[in-house]
Image (cartoon, rainbow over all chains, first blue to last red; front, side, top):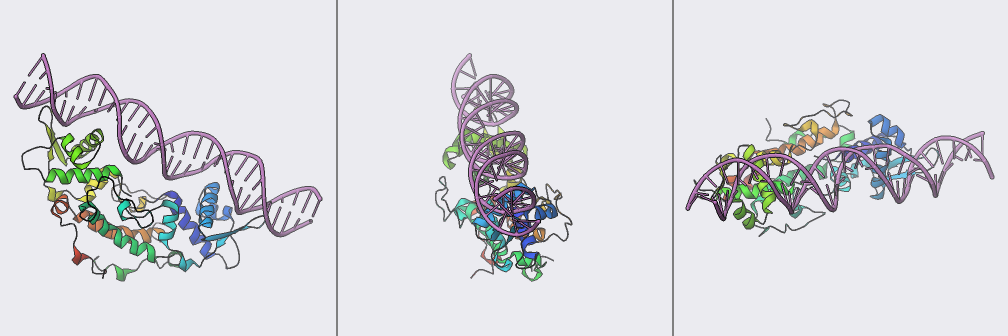
Length: 149
Length: 149
DNA sequence: ATAATCTCTACTGGCTTTATAGAATTAGTC
DNA sequence: GACTAATTCTATAAAGCCAGTAGAGATTAT
């Protein structure tokens, strides 16, 4: 399960991608439109700002806007910023690799092999899908799912 | 990330699948062989027993053994027993479906669509891979990964 | 009986999640 | 310059989860 924060972050970014370029959206507007607790959203936007995804303008009529184009912000980036590693095991993580202390040999670990197969298609989707895709309703890509009837 | 408990459970089941049929393995043997805290493993085996995956014999020379064939215990079953839902969002869970209160329309939710694509291949792997596969080193199935060079 | 083992409940310490509160800072407006 | 509206930043708190520990009780073999 992804955290509520991560879901809020994605929704906020999608909302920001829809405002007219050059303008800014205020925390309270996003919060009420997306039903996110305002002060909680503040913290989330702050984290996204520290990661360089959004910019803010302070003071009266301030607000937030995307710093990078929505087509360059991937789901994977957002999830890693908010929730940390995407991988199901530390020994499969890109951003927080750690050896399992109790694992005899990483390269023959059967559990690792199974989860390596699990994480691979997950990464493909999350690293290729951007905020712009989601905002435009381009999230579904049936051609990439040939195994489903 | 899967929990440590889930990883321990998978390792314990793989260990149990390797003992001679009819016999039983003791908690302490599995614990020392797999480097799992014994009392912690006890709880895990108890949960697996309550789910009908293993059986136990109490008293002197007691121990645990698989109740179902290893080829009928899937990774998905183990993960759901120990960690709960596999799905990244409540609205995509099979065993614990819940509507997102803050979601306007589930069928047009773009975030849901993205994660629906994520979870689908994950389920395929986890529901098709069994303890027997892992124990036999059959975890890797290159034919199913045509997209990798 | 005794020793070994599982069973069951409870508990703890630390961490994470989901917020809430409030003071400080900044920027626009009158 | 004063006022107001907004973000920024730090602190805090309640709740729950995770990993592990503890110990009494039940059961079985010898």
